[in-house]
Image (cartoon, rainbow over all chains, first blue to last red; front, side):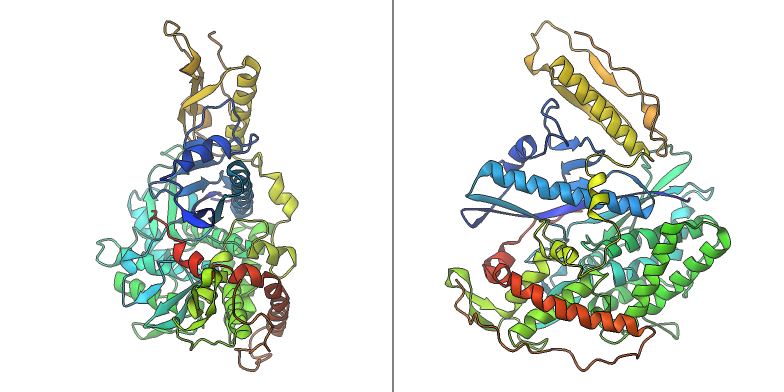
Length: 514
Length: 67
């Protein structure tokens, strides 16, 4: 499929403080208030009844997920560039909500959102409590054509692409300073080891890597949706763009029959687990995994896939400027990854590399190095508590991910210290509504129409169904007299938004029964 | 405020001497050097942000597990 519909979902970590002390968003009933008061009017108007699971006017979904995290599911985009823009616009929206929350609650309360996947308790690699690590997700979704192989299709995808998925952290890992055997270690991704913990003892390897959802949110006779759950949340644009663009082109190559099997050997479950473990822990990118007598590194495996992707684009004609950009950046990152001290050469494009450079800078400032004991006390922090080497180095590792216009990642961008793909104008242009090239635009238009209707009629609407494909809203019964029947006022025909590629489906007029 | 020394110490460079031109693209190696210099400036500015409550922040950044 080219171009392909792609979307991403981001679960956010949160850190709330009341009078400087950490407080709980759930216990205080604060999520309730957040959804009522801290969503900008242009994203969710007052004339829609609030709930903790809503579609925003821009076509995104905002909700509290099962792990009690705020989750932003960005609207569908056509191609990796649009999908990246929608994700970044989501980040801007989350920043704005944090600002509104801080205004609403006043001086004593502060909430900060972090676009990452692990928390401050999930730092000890061994002795091995990785099963206790708190990890939450960043998911990427790809609409794929349903082939005739039935369930075998997913088997084919996983056998051809699993080595790609365990090595894509080379550019798509967000990095994590951790402790192993009381020594510092720099992991290149956050989700690498927790994914491993899920795989061990599992009967099917691929389930935690590739979630084969057969809810395509579209015509199930034509489409399926590939749902990748092992990705890291990323701040830097080239990394996001590459994560989505490389996966997209490889799926295309597979769909077109150009890629039929793994290009770098036969990888069994055990091999994938072992390699994932080794690669995640080695930020020098030089670790070798021996598969049946052939030596592989994280870089060599990615190079196999890059070569296939290039050859596919050259021969298939499935290429455009965007795809060429994906390949060029992939080349650039792989060249840098092949050099000594690769993190220094990759730091402008890749989250983990940038963060590792930041960490080493912090070390340099304080006369520390990678051999320092994590629990070494190096001074006193706020509140007179002892400051350990680990905590002072961990701080930038975490702060990098803050959803804040003055956060580290955004400052790096503003000063030209990291590469960008899109301008701030482009990101802002999709903040309140997606591009008119997918069904997400139709959803956006319908929600705007409903809002205007409700405002005009001076009523509040309650959504009894809101889904990627259709919505059903009624007048908020809260103000109705008991003997008045509430009729459906809006019910988009389920077929209307079934075609994910149609930004302008036919939807019925809004009825007005009162 | 933090009690530890606020004055900027001489930066200890944790990296070995650059090996320029040993890879495919010397441009990339040069860029790597530049970002290290630029980051020095940025870190000077965010020093206070990083030090303030680092201990409490890292330990308190606790979440429930997600998917």
